[in-house]
Length: 508
Image (cartoon, rainbow, N blue to C red; front, side, top):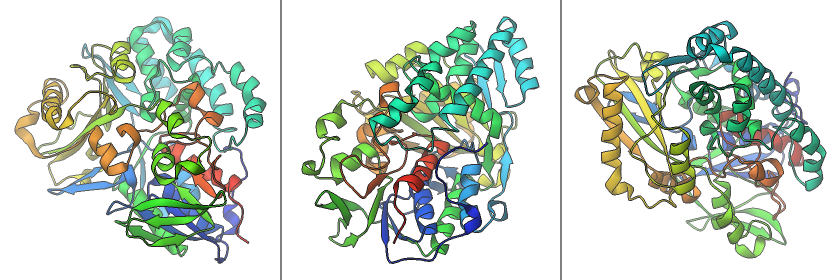
């Protein structure tokens, strides 16, 4: 069963272009998906992005023969991508080669124990039998609960706008029945006792910018979502998906303008009328969609007199996700025993998360996500070489951290850990290296406070309480991306664009 909502019918094909114009700010995955969906409906779409290539956080770095996806790498719910091709009368399989990833994640605990997290129920039971056999029944009950939450939280609600309080009140009883008042960590603890298995079943919110100890348990649906649709990797990397989406947009008559920054959204009589670029050019539009960070959109692109709900005070008082320290590197040898996706858990779990999200200090220890795309696609690196990126969740820019001073020592500490665990002799085999710090999330992506995923997904910042897909303050302004409903992650941002089918009027 696919998610509910008033959706476009792929069988109808693209509609003829009208004279109605839409401007999309930002060529990230959410912005490109929104542009395609609007183009299919007959809007003349212009996408404007300040970077020199499309993709936003999903842009690509190419250095010394290595190709690095800058950001999202875990492709789940691939039907959300396939649907974009179908709406344009095409098959994604004709241009994108998607490969399943197994295991989904290899998890390494601090004591060296490995756990292969997979979508195969038999293999998962075997892994749990080795790690925590006493929790087998509890694990099965947790999976059943995750499916129950998925059926409501994703299939029924992820693609439906929460435009008013009535929408929220209508679903509140079902949400409470699903224990949405609990955090992810609290819900997991109801089912399993082993501390390591609790970490395995609760880390998913970190993939969308949430602290498992404060994120609503609705996000445990991710566990079942992965089991249902798998984890995939497009040959050529996430950048291949971006390239394919740009081709769809241009095939619909859409225009992509790179290296141009929007200075402000023009508003007249409470309605968005277009955008003004930094060079002074004005682009009139009947519909404006912002794929920029939602807090940045309101704080910097909309004048205060047009904002009654998303005031500067409300923006400042909202809680934001952690940031990320990302190290992209290539080696002149292969590490064939390293999985495509590896999670290295450190000596602390809850304490480290408190440092990152609450006290906002840069700890000496860390937990890491290691991406080795060459495990699936060797073309991401020269022959005989491997491409990697490793990311460490870190506090956003409210923390007192001078990243110009701390970046290299922090990288060296990560390299030492990797050398002593997964990648022996790493420093001797490095041939290319590049860093992305919280400063870059602010300067490159205009992420408020350098938060990598925008607004945190806790209960009072979810659904109706997030910035709405149809702006509460300005008619004709719409938001997509990680900072609106339903939230971050590839399924999340593609779903934000899907919501526009419901809230953006058809062109006349």
